[in-house]
Figure 1 (cartoon, rainbow, N blue to C red):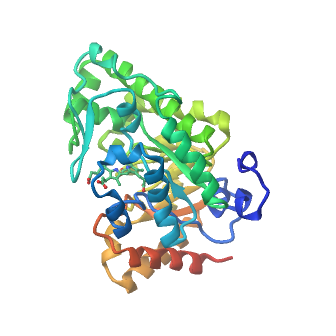
Figure 2: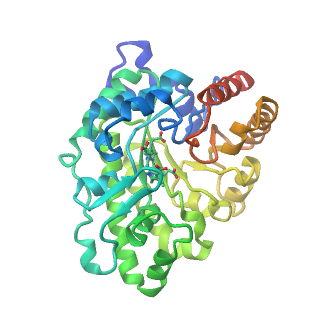
Figure 3: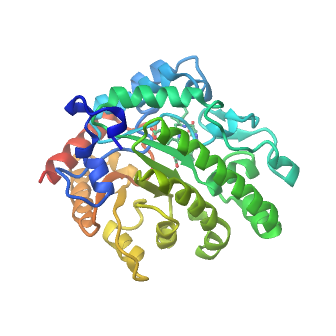
Length: 358
Ligand code: CP3
């Protein structure tokens, strides 16, 4: 995937990227690491540059997107950058009336209640998000040998915001819609699959080297409901992206019971939260005879506040358990908490690199 960006200088050579090698299950110089939500409020330089600009406005400004995406790469020396955006950005881009409330999350003015409400939800075209193409192209140029991960929200997690009208703990309205009006549910989820496909395609065509589909809240579902109402739609996304040949990561929180299904949906790399050890995650993914695949995770973000001794011990345990998989990408089990200490995150990166050096 690096070739299209020119291999004029060794620093733009992505073929030796530890992240991409691990994602393909190939030998690595060290275990690669990045953090979900590595860009954001835990960084003073992020809080400074975001002052006076709303979250969604900043996602539409290439100067801010490029700078914010690069901030954690500079500070931590992580093995991948993640594009600075949000899972609801493509909906905003096609005119869905929503905002991201600080400290709350996405809030939707008119929650989806009927088939008429689906009209507003259409896939983004490259013209709708020219700022995304511009930002990704500039990032790929500046990142050189560090890969850029593009991302989108999975149909279920994005649907939850649209149906609930905002963040939800139990996703009760979304589940009621699934079971009460399956036809409307599947129509909504199919549209959101098309949104994710379009948004991810824009990022990959502009130069992103990998993609992650965030189904953060899928863990609220039983395996049965996941199989019937969610898996086909997420599988459609992964299948559509397969033409690009970039590694596809699938992540959700509290998905211990869903790991084999989320793997089967079409992921090349399965994201694991802190509740299931990585070797046990591999056992679950392969229990039905499926081939093992690379995993990503899974340090409990709470350990960032536990002090150096316990933190290093946990990192060692996770590195050891990660050896059960054909590839391991170190990450937190969920996003960086806003009150995390950047110096502790730097220590995590240095520890993972030092302890895993081959
Ligand atoms: O560094 C990165 O990981 C890239 C940036 C990123 C953001 N959102 C920026 C952001 C990514 C990958 C996301 C994805 C996202 N957005 C998810 C999936 C990941 C996850 O955490 O499970 C979800 C569920 C959302 C929806 C959303 N957007 C939430 C729950 C929030 C937090 C609200 C808050 O203020 O606590 C947002 C806002 C948001 N997205 C922020 C950032 C940096 C914080 C807004 C701010 O800084 O003002």
